[in-house]
Image (tube, rainbow, N blue to C red; front, side, top):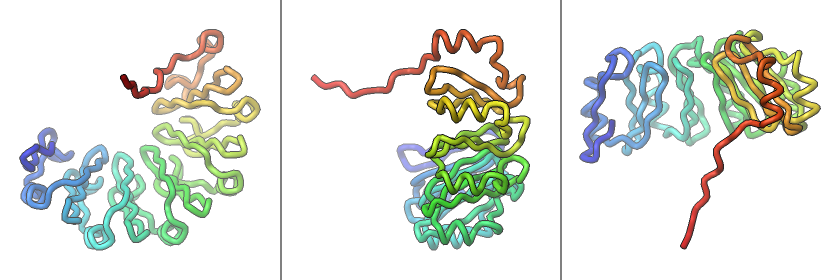
Length: 258
């Protein structure tokens, strides 16, 4: 917690970010500007431009290898999986740290990320995928859980990503042409073979996900699901009801005057 006096307090499991003893003086002296987290660590951008991290050193709490770069080039945006961070710097450079199996190693894609510039990033629990400003798409992290786009890269780039959703180990992307692509753990939503025709014919309006499954509301009013059945990937028992009565979503907040 950042306090109104400028002091900083933390509590909870010391191995997962609840102990700021090593960085407390720095956090308070230079003042916190913004904070991001993995499941087990924090990283803070300070008002002086300095950067501090704490928590599990293997899962994002140790920035020793990237601290100079983060501070010299200044953090613009940060994204995370449960065990790794990736940062887009204001110079266009990109840095990552944390567990390499969870996206903390960008060696294979660093040149591409920096040359074509990151536009947007999405993540599963194990991997990242980035849409670049040139329209190219890059992924890294655990190849079985979203970090390998080999099978769909051409399609993603040719038809252009519109929106992306994820479970804990798979991605699904709606493309600007109306096509739909998925990759990652096939049992957790990475295989849309059974629903691809329906998704593309009726058009995706909205998607929701659990850890292991996706549910899509189509523009026709139909609903379809895929992924792990026990996690919501089977709507056979409620499909008729969903389509007959629709799914309620909260109204968008609007400002009032007068």
